[in-house]
Image 1 (cartoon, chains in turn blue, purple, yellow, orange):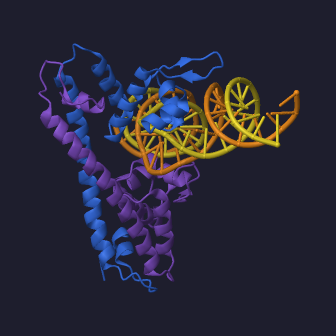
Image 2 (image 1 turned 135 degrees about the vertical axis):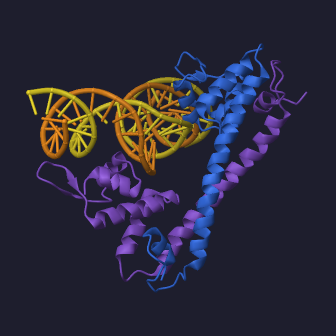
Image 3 (image 1 turned 135 degrees about the horizontal axis):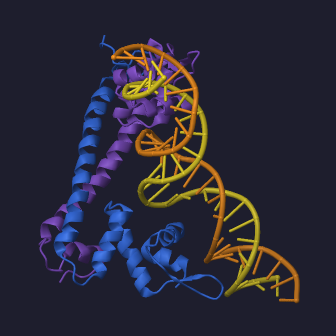
Length: 131
Length: 131
DNA sequence: CTTGACCTTCTAGTCACTGGAACCTTTATG
DNA sequence: CATAAAGGTTCCAGTGACTAGAAGGTCAAG
């Protein structure tokens, strides 16, 4: 299987697959012409990575998760710990974004959005007393 | 006012203030010894940037917002347009993160988190049929 | 005179790709 | 058989917004 087919099979861009090889996440074999050849195992690994990335795991966590997947003697606690710490990070970001959203939507609602210069959004940013 | 005081006044790290000068967002004067001297105007600009960044505006939007703030003939519609587009981006990210969170929290709840290897989190990532 | 707290510039690293250039190989078509 | 299109390769540079660290200059206090 060459890179284009793997890209189609996993949904990962070819560039990304090459990048994953660069950082040692997959090691496809090579044909005589230099082309990468992906085994079913490689493809499965890449699909795993695609799924893990789609859940927002950082690449280094993906690497750990892959290693745990390969380790028949793993403890599910180790997997869960990675997932929980990622969940906490997501919650942190959600909190941040929600706070931004709340402030911004109030500001947007209060701005006339016409051709006059008065603007509560700018007043807020400039930390002026609202007139 | 030198960089440390400005940092204290705005909450921005000195490194960040230098970076903002690098990319042309502020242009503090220089003393004979090469030290930056920040006017009240500079400090106000940096406080504006700090506030806009804390609402998640990209630096280039901050640049536009600063320009609009300086332009007495602006239309508030232009400011509002930037804010609305940022709000949409935030909503997009919130949607993404919420979807991740939903999936992940289900997976985390379903994982025993003990010393046994069975793990629904890994099963999901490997796209296996849950046993 | 020295110490310590400032300040400066410069380079390189972060994260996870992505774009593009320059070039090679294979396959299909006239 | 020539050629063109569609695949493949490597390598370099850029993204955003900083941040770490090195090497060194300046200034005020004791």
